[in-house]
Image (cartoon, rainbow, N blue to C red; front, side, top):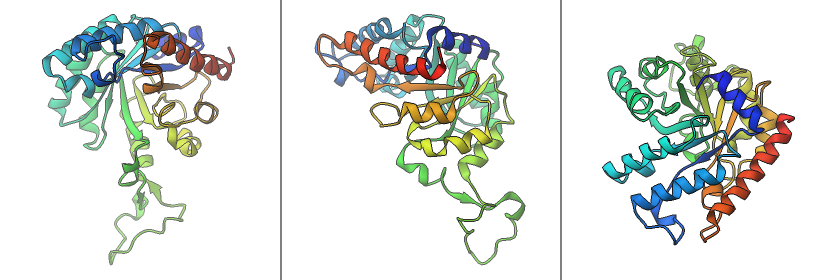
Length: 288
């Protein structure tokens, strides 16, 4: 899916909602088997219930890989069931040396036909480039995540590049210095040169809303995938006010808040209601 097609879907529906299919057999409503067959039936019901209010679906591959071959089959059948005008993301967080990344890209773009895949940037440009070589596909790079461990690396201060070789004696840079930067800032600014605004997005967690203004300064026109709204407590209003661009520029994912809105016989109706509420709020921010 091209950027133009994605933006068109957003404004036609008045929504930039993604539904996360993090499907766990242990959490399925009682009417479903606790099996991969139950996972698939549940996914189809959720897609039918929410497709009118979202622009895409994000599949966390770990929930399917955990079940071996049958899990992969459920993932493939789920992607094939999603309407073609919806954006599909494999939340796989892949990233390895170039020839390995090429095979990961083929797996998710050619075999499973996802529109996008999430990628970890730690190994650098040659580990990401193979994903960017596919036409009309998207690479979604981890930028600033919402998990507590983000402080271990992403939120560490760095010496400015021009002074990196001048430090001696094991001293640390002054965190208050305007010349230092966070690691995530270096990652996003550098990675932005590897692709373009039509094939590269960034993951920015909704619980980091205080950083969105600065992040927009670093990458003013890229799309962001924003998880963490709903069960994780991120504010849709804050995100929309701080991160939205003239063509929206954000995709907000909600998983548990929608797919597990009810554990009873009314699970589909409850999922519809929550998705409709998100879309209704989003429509006001889009000005539709």
